[in-house]
Structures are given as structure tokens and as C-alpha cells.
Length: 378
Image (cartoon, rainbow, N blue to C red; front, top):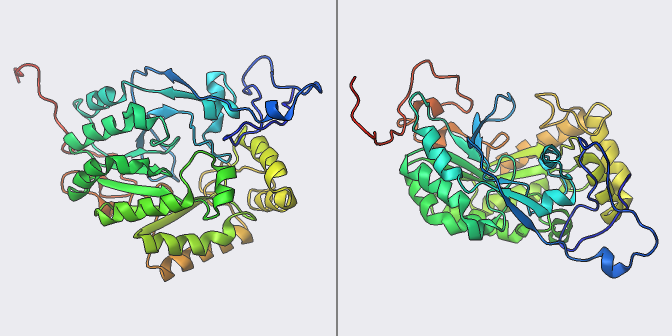
């Protein structure tokens, strides 16, 4: 059963249909008795504790520039309608729609697990990426401080980290980020999708406003923290005309690098995005979707490595060319994906981080040692 479209205040998703792995499909159905007040009622966020046995996730994808990441939250209250991470909630028996924005799983033991993992014998230090799935600085971070706890561990253990966020809450941790930057251990990437305040509120309802994100870049840069801007995603027919303006604004704020990712609509994201287009920009819907299909082999999503982040065809090539030209004009170095340029980090302390995508080390590099509980016999 398909959900009838409804609107919850401060949320982007317009349905809460059951996940695709469920035996039975459930959804809201308009029986004619609904009222406008009911359609726009507030939907509270619920939080659940998750206790994993490990917190570092390994990645072998050839088109993302990191091999390991940490995500302290599952689901994201920012509620970006285009978020490629939405289908992950289906594995929890939940909806990629409203559930993804309102049912948030937290990992309160993340910092402890991380310290155990990076101090194990044989661990080879590589950059840990944060914000690769859901934002590490969503609203609940102000209370739980799970990301801060992870940063404290990485700072104490002298371990490099790259953070991607669209939240100004990262400035709450500017003290530890400043300290890590002085040791060449951190890079921050701020995602700026659009400079249109109204569009941002509709598309990313609980994320920081575009103006706040630019101020965040400025504040980080002023503290000497290497900061990049990421246009993620570029939405052809909706936001692609802003590429030059976004890069100019980011450079003016102090960003030194910039990257971009083409809109991806995997799994359950495509119907959610189509429904959102019908409500908010119906006159552009046909053009946006047809352009996406043209650069995705006739489909709305192309999961193939090498194509999923950029697309293909003349429109994709033109966007890439425009981005390179605008970045060069504004003095911005080009970054890829979450962007982990090798010159940001202290490669003397961590030789395995010399390349953006280092090969597996043939010998163990220096690692952050834990204090032994007792003396070793050998």
C-alpha cells in the first residue's frame, strides 16, 4: 500500500512507507476524514541506544577517498530529502522516509570502542572519516557529545581524522580541532548544497542555513583548520546554476579546496525525491528527472563505481568543466568525494596516510600505543 502524501512540520519526507524488506507493506491512507491540521502536525524525534561491538567501518570502494570511517549516529534529523543514506533504515525494519528523520540510533560506547580498536597490535593508522553516512553534528550532538568524545580520543592518540558536515555545531569543538590542526591531524569539509535559503529549508529542513555554513567555513579557516567546501549533491535543473556562486562564496569565506558529487537516488530515495519534487517544484520535475536519466544510463540511479559520483554524458561533462573552471578562478584546489588531500595531514607521524587512497601497508607503521596492563615477557 502506498502512502498518501502528507506533510509533517520541519520534515522533508512526505511519506513513511514500510521498508522494502518487510513482509507486509504499511502506510498512511487518506480515508477522507483527515484535516489540514492533522496533515501538518509536528512529528517528534525518538532516540534509541545502539551498542555495536566495533565502531570502525572499512570501505573498499574505489571511488571514495577513505578506507575507514566512524559514524556515531544512524539516521539523521537534518532530514535532507536527497540523502543517499536513507535506505540504510530499511535494514532496521524502518522506513527510509519519515523514520529516517525521526528514529535516530546513537552509539554511546563509540569512543571507548574506537580507542580499543586503534590501540590493538597490528592496527595501521589511516585517516578516519566522519560524516560519510550521516552527519556527526546533527541536533542531538549538542546534548550527547558523542562526536566530541570520539575527537578527544583521536586527539589524545595523535590520530588523523577528516570530518564532513553541514552543521555549524562543529564550532562547539573548535578548541580540539584547532589543537589537532596544529599537529596536522584534521581536515573539515562543509557541505553547501544551495545558497537559496527557502530551497534549503524545504530540501534540508533541520540543517544549518546556507549563511551559517559559510560562516562556519570562515570561523574554521580563521583558526587555521584546513577547510574545504563540498557541493553535495549537485542537482541538475535545480541547483546546478549555483555552482559558480557557491564556490565564490566558499573561497571568500576562507575555503582552500572544493569538491562536488552528482545527485544519487539509490533504492528508496528515488520515490521520496520524486514525491518531494511534485510538491515543491512541480514545474521543474520533468526536466530534473529526465536530465538525471540522461546521465545515469536511462535510470535514476547508476551504482557503478566510477560513474555513481559524477554521472556521464554531455550534461555531466559540462557540470564537471564548469566546476573546474570556477574552482580555478577562485583559487580553490580540487577535492574528490569526501576529499582527504595528502598535504593536510602529518605524514611523518602516519606514513600510511601519504596518499589519498594508500595501498595496504606492507609493514606496520607507528600506531597509537595503549598503556600495557602488565609487562610483556618478550
